[in-house]
Length: 403
Figure 1: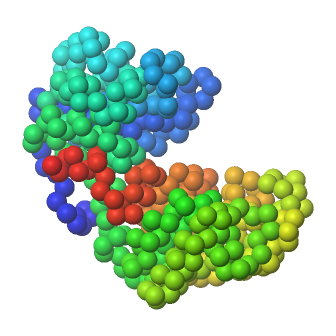
Figure 2: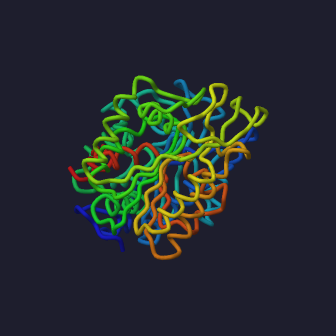
Figure 3: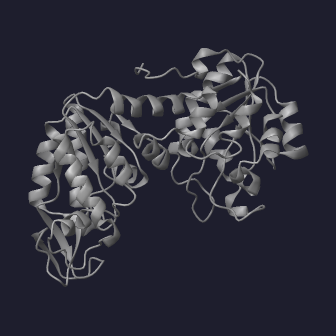
């Protein structure tokens, strides 16, 4: 059981016998053109919480959003498409309500018996959900007598079902097993990391990662930087980056980060070389150049072999590793080697006893693409929520339970 860094009420602290339990889950899963679930990771992640309630003798009413409907019913965003996959994951039937409030939801919830599961229709068919509408939250709350938030992926949003609803449950509100595990593992990295601690930060833009870098600057021993954000740093150091992605308005921030790292004795690694192309595709002229001397007609799209060797060495010597963001455009085969090698280095270090935390959509996609998820200590299901927690921001979905 992971160490808790502040008290969190979870479903382990309660029995749910004869209780109708409203559970906010994150079933925002991808569907193909025939409305079949193509990645059931988030559904499977919710199973332990659901099973615990059922095993106690309670019934479960599941709430979630799916996609970004414009307001009102849209067939492609109906959660009815998730029922079959959820039923398979739970190995039992799942009932479905054609609305999340009103008569269909109310009657289905009223008729629900212990051991049964009900999935409500997409919350975001109502604009009131994202607005955090008090009346909408109250209608949802009326469907059950206990509230569980197990949707880490939306914990950073103060929506009706993720935060406001908790106001209607004085003591009958807790975190689910997935949410508790997410918070525990991130807090472990933030507050009890075994040294050396290496943070691998990638992705396209410095602007999206600046706060996490600043918050970790007094906690880590090493920063490994990859992805498009590299070139804003290189330009800040007066290097030539050719046609590479640069956020000119962030050059001052990049200089500030370099200074903060130097002041804190943190080693910040930028790639010594980069795999470049004359086009943002595999059809251009591809070459490997020193990252500070990229030709004017080329752009960096992956870290090069020297960078891979250095980065993997740093990772191998680390005891705690946090990875958020790819090293390059790994969706293209010609530019995936850096991300793959770094991922395998993280997995190898983990096998040797390091603790590794991976989060963020692209990082998780990379881990899955290279079949490394079983070799990572913890893979977070919530990109935005993980980032905000790593930035030191209080998550509304967690705070609402603790109030």
